[in-house]
Length: 360
Image (cartoon, rainbow, N blue to C red; front, top):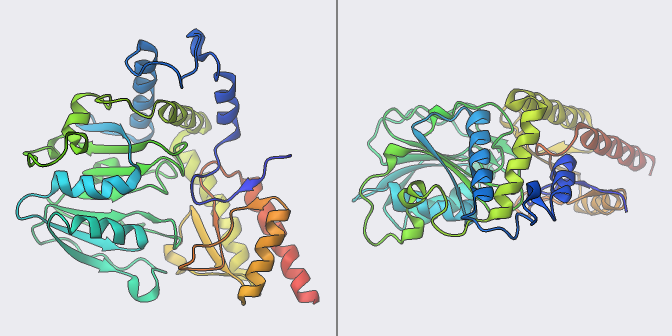
């Protein structure tokens, strides 16, 4: 069977060159005589993998020297708890920008450790736009934003002014997809399974000076300082997932880095959005200026047509296009690994479906 075009929101499609490289090294990584799956995380060979992966993250994102780069477990969902546990003082207070389900979940977790105030929200229109985010003038332990909303297909294009208040960002679904100024953020976290690699590892980039007096009740494994001190090797890390992240980042670097990656992603998104803007039956669900480059939700006039389209699309090799239940319809996740060809072929298929619908 030929490989399908996988539009899954995550775990997502991986670059074919990365999968081929991993298969070549599966049984014998760099003449070690073993797979990365089998080697000790304390071995010199794996320590080298960690060093190379961190260097790639720093080079591609321009991470300043006073920031730590960590490879943790538990997904972005664990960071919903780790952030307030480590950054909230007593009495704790944090400001959250509510732009979707994941930002809501993050705020709900933070409420367990202190006071949470919603700085801005787009809940009133089912998160179909990015609200205006006011400059932060009040005292707070941190401000939290979600830069790209996987479910609703929106992205923050203007980073809010937070003054001396640390800015925390969940970048799970757009990390490494475009150029960013890492120095604008005090802490960035991202689950790997969209643009970085397979599920199992979470990237955290943070200012080292954020680590202060952590309450004694915080478990050792949930303390950023412990992981910084031990270079993400306090316990056995998700070794193979980290190795795969290394291969993905090498692929991004070979393409020309984040500038080139951003150009490719804008081209892909442009192909799909241009069609949606001119189609008679397919419609996007997001305000134009807030559209994500990574996740594109769209709908047909009726649920029956949505179901028919999804069935035919899957038969044609376009899989995982079903939209989240809170939006309905379809969602094409076009992360870094989705080639331009895949988006163009999807649009061609949509055009043929539209023509068929018109002929009925």
